Length: 303
Ligand code: 13P
Ligand code: SF4
Image 1 (cartoon, rainbow, N blue to C red):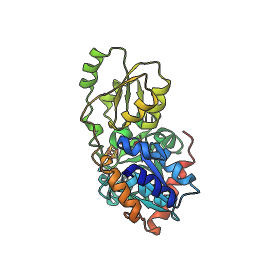
Image 2 (cartoon, helix red, strand yellow; image 1 turned 90 degrees about the vertical axis):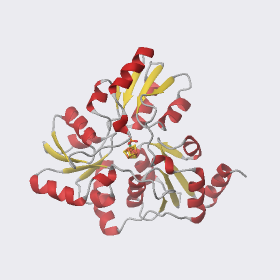
Image 3 (cartoon, protein in one colour; image 1 turned 30 degrees about the horizontal axis):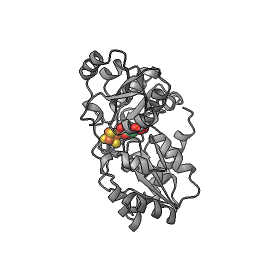
C-alpha cells in the first residue's frame, strides 16, 4: 500500500476529514475531501457533522479558527511549523495601543491572525468578504489588521477610512509580485487576463482585470473567456486552476511566489499526524469564546 492509500484507509477508520487550502501541494489537494479558500474552509469546518477529526492541510490560523468553531472535534495541523508570518505581525498590545488612539473605531481583523488577537476584535473577515464586512459596520473609521494592502483595497472599495494595525503588516509571498513582471508577460500574452490577490500591492491591483480571494479567482477563471490567464498569488493554486480548466493556460506572474509555510504539509507528515493523532490544535476556552463571537459574526455576513 502506498502512502496515499494508507491515508485514505486511515481516514475512513478514524472518521477524519481532510480540508486543504488552495496553496497546498498537488498531492495534498488531490487527497483532500475539500479544497478551498479561508472562508470556505472555515464554513466547511462549521458545517461538518459526521467526522470526529478535522485535518487542516493549511497554516496555523486556519486550523485555530476551525478549533475555535468546533471545540468538540479534534483538529490536527500536520506540521506544527506551518505558521503564517503575517498572523504573527499583530500583537494584542498593538491592538490595545491602537484602540487608545481610536476608541470609537471598531476593530476588524483578517482571519490571518492568532486567536489571542481575534479575541480583541469586533469582527473577523477574509479576503473574500472583507469589503462586505467593513460595509456592514455603522462606522466610517475602522481599525483593520494585519494586512496593509488588504486594508487599502477595502478602503478604496468602501470609501471608509481604514487605519492599518500594525502600520506595515504584509504577506512576504504576495509582496514578491511586481507590475513589471506582468508587463513583460503581457508582451508574450497580450490578450491574457490578470488575476491578483488583494494581499498584493496597489501597483499590482492597478494591472489586474480581477482582484479577489483564491476561490474567487477559481470562479473568475471558470467564467472568463480568456484563454491565457496571468495569476498573482501563491503557486499552489495553479494545480486547481489547471485541473478545473484543462483548456486554459495559466501563467504565474512571478515564479518564486511560494509560501514555504503552506508547503510544510507533506503526505508523510499528514499520515504521521493522523496515525498518532498528534499536533492537536487547542485554543483555551477563555480566548476561544471571544474569538468565536468575532468569527461567527463574520459568517453571518453575505458575500
Ligand atoms: P484566501 O482566503 O484568499 O485563500 O487567502 C488566504 C491566504 O493566506 C492568502 O495568502
Ligand atoms: Fe500567510 Fe502569505 Fe502564506 Fe497566506 S501566503 S499563509 S498570508 S504567508
